[in-house]
Structures are given as structure tokens and as C-alpha cells.
Length: 82
Figure 1: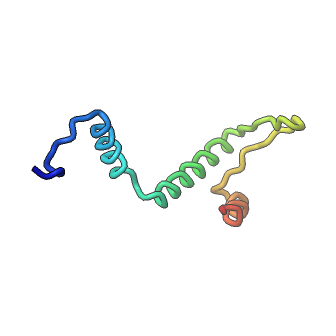
Figure 2 (figure 1 turned 60 degrees about the vertical axis):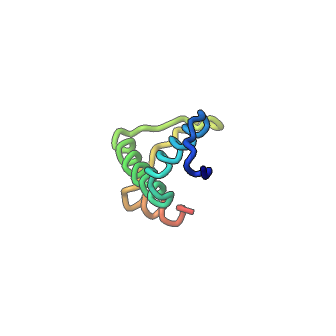
Figure 3 (figure 1 turned 45 degrees about the vertical axis):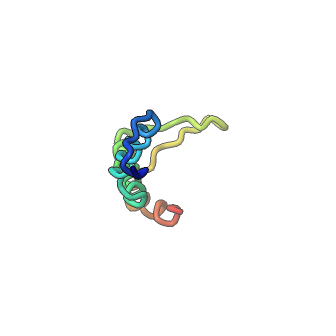
């Protein structure tokens, strides 16, 4: 009997099989990066529309959310992507 025909019934074999199935369903890392950028841009547009801000812990000044979908936001975002 060859080694490939022996079924793996151990817990680690089942775990590795599950991880492999999930890993095969995950999109390419480039697409994940693009999806996260889109989510970030939409989130900043929503938060800036509501005027959300946070307090800078070092000096106490408010930090306002920049809308990355605006012209000013795109001018800031494109050179600073990397």
C-alpha cells in the first residue's frame, strides 16, 4: 500500500485540511490590499461627513478625519500610498 492512499484521520491532518480549504478561498493578496483601500476610503468619507474627530494625546488638539475621496484627500493620498 502506498503512503498516498492511507487516509489521514489525525487531528493535525484534519486541521491542515481545513486551513488549506480556507486558504484556497482567500483572494490574492493584491486584491485584499485593494479591497482594504476601498473600505478605508469609504469609511473616511462617512466619518468626515459626520465630522468625527479625535484628540491628539500629545498636545490635546483635535484631529479631524480627512475625506480621502475628496480632491484634497486624493492629492494627499496618492503620493503617500507607499
